[in-house]
View 1: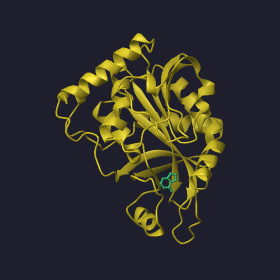
View 2: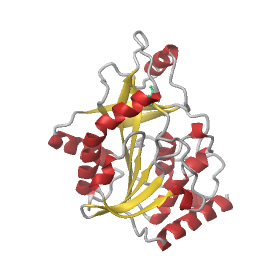
View 3: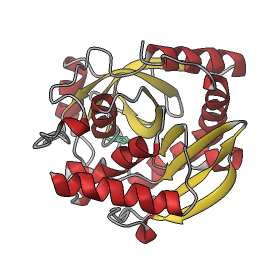
View 4: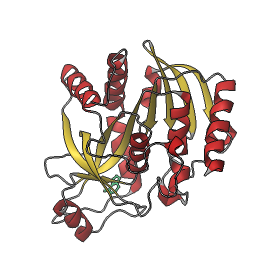
Length: 281
Ligand code: HPA
């Protein structure tokens, strides 16, 4: 794994040379969610294909660039477009940018995604703050990483999402008049959507929502000691007893409609966490 550490280091050095200096907040923007960029005073954008060792986004609706700049006084580094296991990459490849962000010095990580709503209280377009997750991905991003430089080999996951960041999200959502559910996210490989029996199974094991991302990044962030928070946009309602066919175009459209409110929420949270220490507890 020396090679993996070296690649992380090389990529971080490349970004530093290109002016990506001391970002304090890392952000991962999910499917159909990009309007946060309008809240960033952009200083630099770098397409993934120019960054050494970065995977290339293969999902055409994911933009594939790093955006560096400021939201208020806070220096942010946003990934516009993420990587998924279903694209064919390894878990270590899809979480590589999180390792690089750690090396660049981020103090917290905020993630967004599009997800299917399993909890019957969730409606299309609703926002859900992740309180916990169930990892159903077929591989683990920590597998084989023995070097202590990555963090603990057996990271604690009793609280994968920072309660302090969660509070910031809840406070800001209330101030903005946005309803924010809280729920348990199941991460599946995809890329197909689920069958009725699978949605029933997910409901029975305690999931409130389901998507194809986020958990690998959150596992790595936890190992690396980076406090994180994640918010999903519900793009389809997954009632196994009344399941309507859904296609990816519709999912992107619903996410796009919720983009403005989610972006506003993210921007306000970023501004409010400035100066807050001990985000982990
Ligand atoms: N299942 C899995 N991933 C998803 C879904 C879903 O219903 N909706 C958006 N991403």
